[in-house]
Image 1: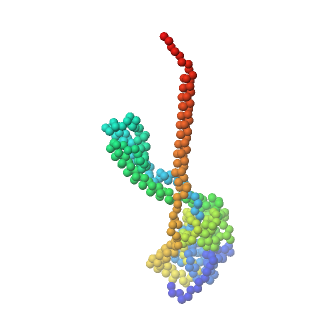
Image 2 (image 1 turned 45 degrees about the vertical axis):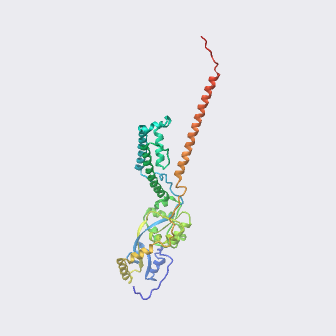
Length: 383
């Protein structure tokens, strides 16, 4: 804007209002006329409007709370059935049943059946169904020389190959996508949890917002779980880093600031639901002679697209390393399958024990019956 000379000053805080009406930080420097412009994104709030003026809004964003991602994920009990809709599973079952029936009909009506022995002719529907199930699972089966049956097995085998390929691809996607169990998703849930400490930037509009809010939940948060004033972080980077380093710590920031600082975090942070929509602008003194020319240039930058480009470049996440979003399949992801295998082994063992018990009782009864017959004396009958 062709200013001949610019003097920069630095403030350690955004600025908050003290009980005596004075301001600290960058807002205090404006009020005391030590500076003409705060060239930073200031949240537009009612108490600040009473003491300073704002330029034309630069952009809008949302304020929300971030917590550390939990270390455990949800057990996907339906992960092994979700790749196919219920209708597809039903169609597969119907195809298997119909194919089993067609095989039995072909076997019973084929002239080639006479080459089989009587034991081979004794084919049951359940046995045929399990053979078809093996074909669907791409397993081998006993070869039959009856051409119609071989054609049915061939069609079922190709169908099974396609189904297994489609199911495997979908299952990999289901297992690779992590579903983390959030302890809560709202500010009320954060308050009711009771184990978290809550933090905002010290001497900022965020802190002033909680001081003056009329929302009952936020009022309780300010009085019950908000960290001590002297322990509050001085900036957003310090606050987000505190979420990673301290246990059960929640921190509120804006979406744009999180996008800028996310790649600097040593842990993965998860957002809660937005608290409010807010507008960011630069601050100037009351009745500042520079406000008009600054607003004019902001509007010109907005109309030409330069402002949007600057914001997009500023909000772009830089320094992200490739592979950070990759995740491995953990033991909890295959827990349903492991339980299914363990359950199958358990029930198979129980059935085997019951069969052995039944066989043992049957053998004991048979032995007792034979012994009883042997103990009976032989009787000779004479005419």
